[in-house]
Image (cartoon, rainbow, N blue to C red; front, top):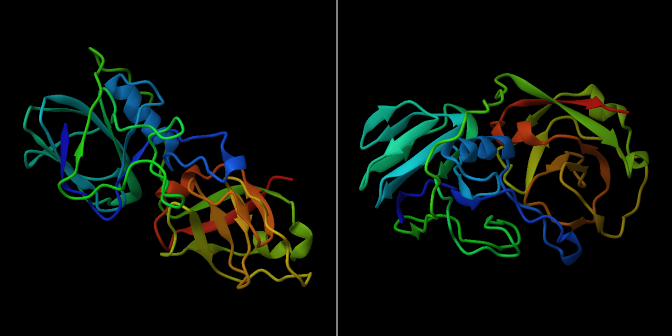
Length: 276
């Protein structure tokens, strides 16, 4: 078992999500930075689908009842075991040891994988916490305990991480289905910033409002991961892992890869590139 000594502002259990249930109104959910979670799982010898922990900005502190092999990936942070700094990503924690994942100094989200995986009860085939639909395990709270599965005998190889953007990110987007409702040149001609109001549901952008070219309202339509929805204020929202499966505001396009947004801090510059 793992005891949560400090949960942080938002630490959740995440795996690769629960695809295939959008027709029931259930989004995929799962780790926002899936490559970082896969890397952590590979390092400790887990399968890619194993559940780990996703922290947000301020990390967490955990006590392990038994000795454990742990990997911490994603955001750059200081990692300590029993108060002593250690080098990530692969860490050996002794029985009774306390692992502390510190404040993110670069990026936003850290991923903690434990050999054997976090063995909470799955819901619809996944152990992911869906913050919008309320499915899966509760977000971590101080004093909570987490079960750990049986681990492999040896650690895996390190596949290497991916870069976290410092200054800004460029996102490829394909227009549609409602690009004819806007002056699309505004999307590609302006720089936006990540808003502090962003979360696992969507990355809210702040910048020049997009101009509507059509009046009226749409009936609710299906939306997907990476959909760029434009509400009444004209400021785009990019849907992330916990997005709703339908929405009434028009979608101007779809981002091909939302992974960089998982580690984009508020104030990060976002530019769009037309993939068409």
